[in-house]
Image (cartoon, rainbow over all chains, first blue to last red; front, side, top):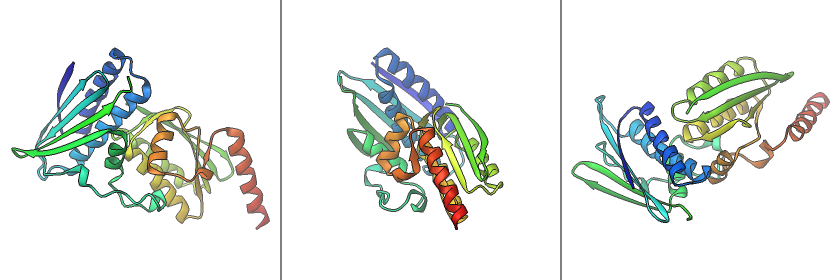
Length: 137
Length: 123
């Protein structure tokens, strides 16, 4: 089963993704922890695109795909913002107190830690991010 | 995806803030505004009681971090109470707070605040 959503680059649009993930979770009997992890992964990826991805003030589409497989959930996020490969993003320094760390980097770090596999490609001026999260079933 | 924030003055200098719901990219400003209001009261301790907070994302964590920075600069402190599973997990991953600032029961927190008050009186 694949669900595809197209949202605008405005954070309130993310509530559509949250609603969809909640429905998918109920349909496939995922526990709350799994639904929260999937929500957090997509929230961090999408908020990062919305905050840092665009150099103009026009409206952009962000495509989100969610596919539930036997033992994992496969998610794709496609945006036409500037090139950004989160896999290469710098890791925050966890040895200094939270309040002394630089802003940014934390969200992408969470995405990496909560995902089982991440792939990035840049094709036809779009960032294509693919994320796998095992469902433990 | 909604957040309600209440706060109470627990005792002299100690303010408790109760965020309820989801502290995320769409709601973090609600908490930020409430914290700003509490900070103007010059508290020496801010307690975030997270008993009814179900979800946090990185922008929510930044509000906690910012509060911690403000309080530390003023010689005060931030403590957290009743972390729910998703929040505990996220805090563990990013090593958000040293464990001595996190309390799992009200009794534990009260004992701590009691000790801090006595310490203040001695000095």
